[in-house]
Image 1 (cartoon, helix red, strand yellow):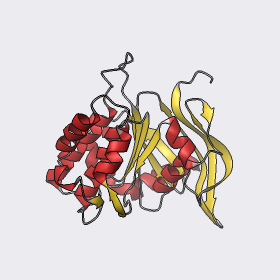
Image 2 (cartoon, rainbow, N blue to C red):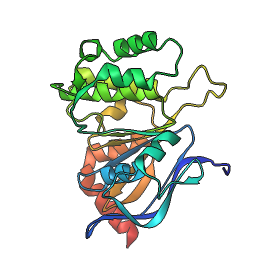
Image 3 (cartoon, rainbow, N blue to C red):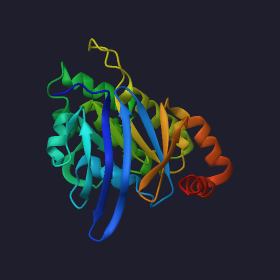
Length: 256
């Protein structure tokens, strides 16, 4: 495999479902060890980008390519991409009857030293002990579902994690805990020689979760492509002051 500087690189990507264009000549590079935020109005293409990177069916790549660790994964299926170290936390994951949270965590931790102890530690950190023997997401609140998703990511410890609206449906008190779990997910693995933190992409409409995280760069999506990128704090402040409408207007002026 060739050397790479960006763990994820998307080049001139066009995606559609049926006749509907979802992504339009989109370019994005996330360097190894960096966590980026993807902002934008509802319907701008944020979730479509995440689902395309993960390889979900129904998202047809008509142009461009997706590179992960320097390898072209554009034609790979979901399982192949997951084995390479890509994982997601969905905004509205399904309930999986008959499969308990404990069972899937046990499987994810099967190759770790003392997996039962590790499972107990992670569940305590996420405050999910009462839900370990319940079917995945069965009867959970919005905040509990977010914590369950993050708990699974922590158990898997992927090289690259994507999160779709981790602050959606989460109250202010629970948001701090969600932020703590995300920071833990991206922190360096102390058992490895390389102390570089893991990389990821966090999709958010409100930007509330970014107040609890250390983000390296932010991007704003509009019309299926990325219109601007920059300092997360500055961009979030401008969006908070003037809204996405002004951001879209500014991007339009730059394109003309």
